[in-house]
Length: 525
Image (tube, rainbow, N blue to C red; front, side, top):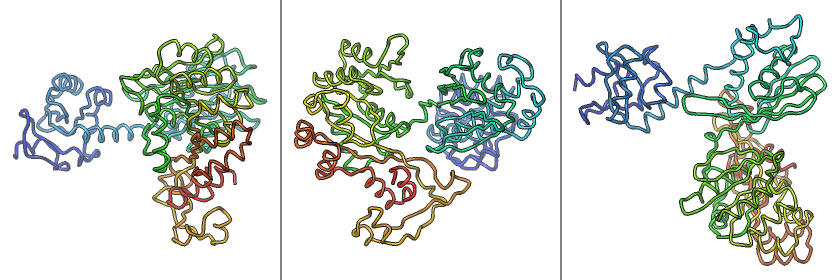
């Protein structure tokens, strides 16, 4: 026992006495990362082999592994450190947690330092260089600065980065949890240089500064993770504005239990996912989480027995086992043409990124009527308005009534930070005007407000979905055929039990998930 224990530093005494395959066991969940000697960790090797050096004892490198078959890993650690490597066995999921924490700590260190800012402020303050000239040695600070900006955006969970030139200011903002926040204001003279560097990275035309351009950047984070940035440039009065959308498949959590559904909504969604044919439509503005909702459904349906094809612009989440097609309108590959091709390839489930025109709508309806489950999105404000939008496109009422199974309208609202939220005193009369019922208020629920702390952004951390789900009932189908308005269709759906977006938001307030002011912002009240 003593010889086994001597493999571990004194700070990390959590140890299991049994031995497997001749290796001692170690409870790595109790590992103190600060106790690991400096210079023994090579993050590339740690990620490659899922193994972690934890200490040096008797001139031997002690390496935590989860698999007894670790000779290759030990050899690489030995070569890298110059020390004989000796293994200890740990539980895989505990090791993964520690390695992820180590990588997150490494990302935390990649923030924009005062020294970097100082270097930037001394570049071209006297005379602005031409954007085409991006190859000089002076561009090194720009490269470092942009890399750190992009890495910080990933670390903070931003969805978009905005690089904005103005007459007397250059502003960089991140969109975090749906809200824009200024994170940096470099010198105005650096605007053309920053735009030029981004255009080089995304393989855009440097000489073209009068027209908008679109491109992509792939950024490698760690040994295995690749993150795509969709880049859009736009000529403005004082230079080119650049917006970068982060497409991080690994960050998308395709778990139906965390989307924000109530139990009845979850059951209704799953019921319609399991129907052999028909159409599921998800609607809402840009950035309302429609893609994640669709892909959560596709993830549930993604089995070996099903042929699933998607047409998207762009492909934001990569899912193994699903045939994903990137739309390319300039080359003639549109949603409609991709959908036609899908129907010739024996599909079971088809996902169309967006129904934008009558041609796409007609093909989608035809597919839904001929034995295929079709999933798609539209940009409307409510579930009922989706039906009238399709009618306005020119889709016959009888086709809508016979093909649509479920319409789901959604929004994303910010979640209160559990560490700093505090109860808010609001008069009962005001709560009744907001839409709460007397029965709900008689239960004396606590309503919280945002405060703000070091663990969140303005009192909020993360987002949750608000949903209204409108299944196609016989009465609603008859109403569509008789030319009912969207308001009449919504009243009928509520009569049949549909929970409106507003009501869904108020329920999240009563649960303590979000604040009343946030629900008012999202539901435009």
